[in-house]
Length: 202
Image (cartoon, rainbow, N blue to C red; front, side):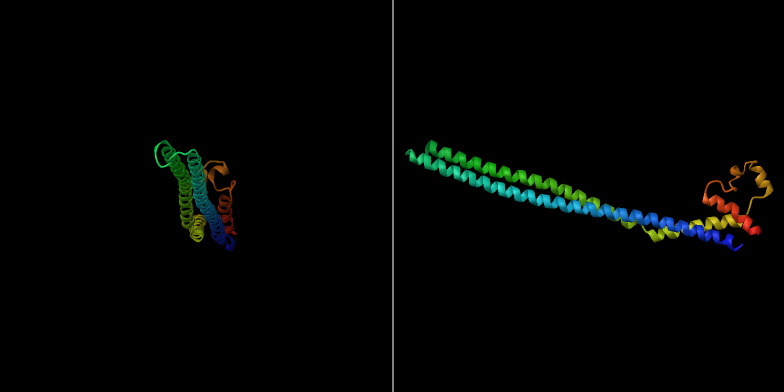
């Protein structure tokens, strides 16, 4: 008798443990994915900063390159006795200065676009991290265990209160014991139901 009454508690405890373990594992997985996404976001931000820094260095190099070219052109034109303040010699210098400024600006813009792409990735990773954190927060292992344990307890308690099927109920199910669902075919739950009435009779 006492063992039969323990079945709902045992099955409830097993169900609660299973539900707790499952919810806890899912919570841990979501937290892990949040950390991975957050690390990816941090890496993308570092790549964005690196792209901008490289762009600044390249732009400065471009500016020095054209400054040196302008100096060489001025010296060459002056050595020929040409007036670099007017006419074609001046136009040559103006063109060099213009294309130097264009190349420098293009270098900076290319770096800015690269950095922007990395920052878009950073924002996407950060959104993923926030979503995974929200998912982890939605899992409550203790609540899941309580709900599963209570539900399973009352399920088995109700089965034990009902007792074994009457001869009329058994006849209506046919001759096959497995078709009636009371013979304990295959699962721990059906086995517990079929054995419990025998304990009651004991």
